[in-house]
Length: 457
Image (cartoon, rainbow, N blue to C red; front, side, top):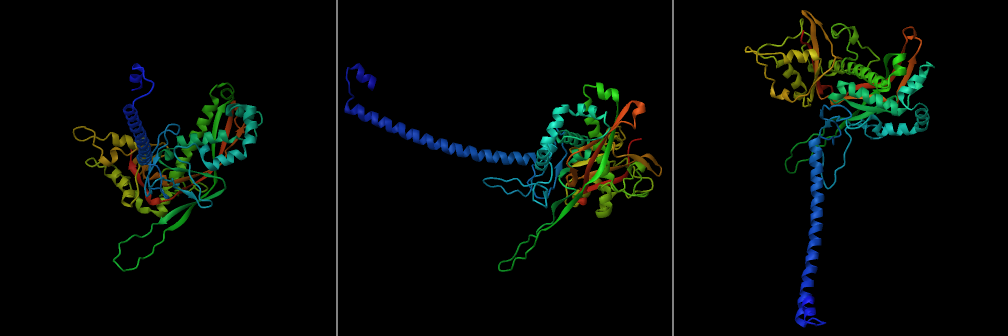
């Protein structure tokens, strides 16, 4: 309308044109106001959707929101994905606060290192690292890396303080090498010799009531799991030439230490304090008396004997050709029938080979039952094959259940001692690592073991 007025040589609009403009301005004003309201509602809707998506993501990721852990899925390698946890008993509202699955009775803080964390990421470990940051800085600046530090130590033969950045990395390598951590065992940083972790032992009683009748009160019962640090050692022997010349000596040595510690932890977790003849046919290598912690089998013997299957028959248990998966089903259903979870099977390779090689009369592989199809089956050489009666060197033990009920205490820091004289005549040097920690099983009924089951020849 302004252009039209200019073309006619007018400097002002007519009254009708002016009224029309005012009407258009009002329409634009209302449209902008409506748009602003719509954008506000859209933003609110986006926030609501984001909250819903976050809840869905956490449910799908099976993140832990419970006070007492109920389930665990085995993870993969630590640097990639250390697994997931169970979502249960969560209260969702406008905002959701995550609760730790295990808490320290002393301060109520989160007791465990989550499976997507490095050991160094836990708040207790961070605090301890901060205490020694200045000391560690001088060591790191002087030597640059763990390999150079070890090379320097070979001339002294003395004990050495390992900066926490380096020792924490070795602890993570031990976690990677341990099948029990892969199955879901929980790592508990220990900033004292004894650490107590609270747990729920009795759920509240819930019942319907008739109108006018009183409500019966019920209390939840709690106790604690106690971890008391004891010492474990790992010894790695390397040549002086390798230590001095190998470019990747650092990664090789830390990897070897981590693997040795992880394997010994697995043995302790499964067979610690198992006992003498009659309960320990695995041999003298697995006669792990105190100060080894009490492992799964010993906990089952003492607290949940019904979850030990096989009863050590005279000649072990051989799979029945017509129903070869019967024993494995009995094992998996033991914790399930106790209202627990079963998230993994752990055996040695020989037992898995025995099952994978089973065929029917037409030489077709025997179909695995549905419940076992997606059940992770983890293997470790920490579980031996042994002789039971006529089952010569084929009897073996198999574990299943909710391995998140295993708590592994890890004392902060790691000491390395260089043994220069002991292997000097061979031109070698020994690296002796001192690990301190403990193992406890929170809920023995969540785990089961089939003893003397037949593995492959």
